Image 1 (cartoon, rainbow, N blue to C red):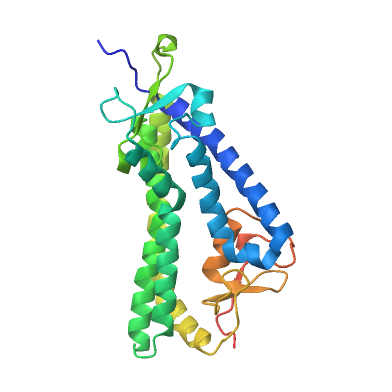
Image 2 (tube, rainbow, N blue to C red; image 1 turned 90 degrees about the vertical axis):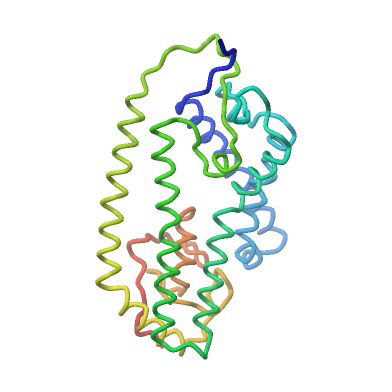
Length: 285
């Protein structure tokens, strides 16, 4: 008879939500300090680094130090390896911190850099540029799908909420197993089924939309952007797929939508903007 009981999805989910609040609080404090000392432009240039460093700093003082995170302490769960009898090794915890803090950011940044390299390459034919950019666009669009699909798997089996924990083999057990009660997890399984159905419908719709409109969209934007030497205020590089906000400021398409995932204000004038109101400038010179 085992003395350790694996935690369920409810405890893990509450711990993740609690830790996310603390991530955002640390990031907000660092961002405020950076803006006050170096100004908004510097913060915009290094905001991704601030996001990564905030998470890694939190992991340094909790997971890497061999302690529970505040979310784990709040829900009385403890990190263990695949055997459920030993604490994860330092290398497992270090890989967890690195992957969770900057894994997807690194992939997204690398794909964006590759997009710019292909776009600026003067030796490639326009037709091949379109095809390469379409493929890279599929890769970037697949990242959120992968995250949501992994969450659906978590709702079904209740083991790994983060992909980083799945890759490093880190699970959770209850710190107080004597408080364990038999739980009905049908609600989470229903949520998993709904999430999968929603992902399938969204994927089919996105695929149909991409098949109908994307080739012409990329073709027009390659011609347009080759004539445009304007700088994006977010990445501080030449704009790619220029779009305009309702307040009239211009950004890269990917930059402004990445920004709107965590902010609803224009990075320049702080006017309230909505993702649905962003306008792609397909004939901008």
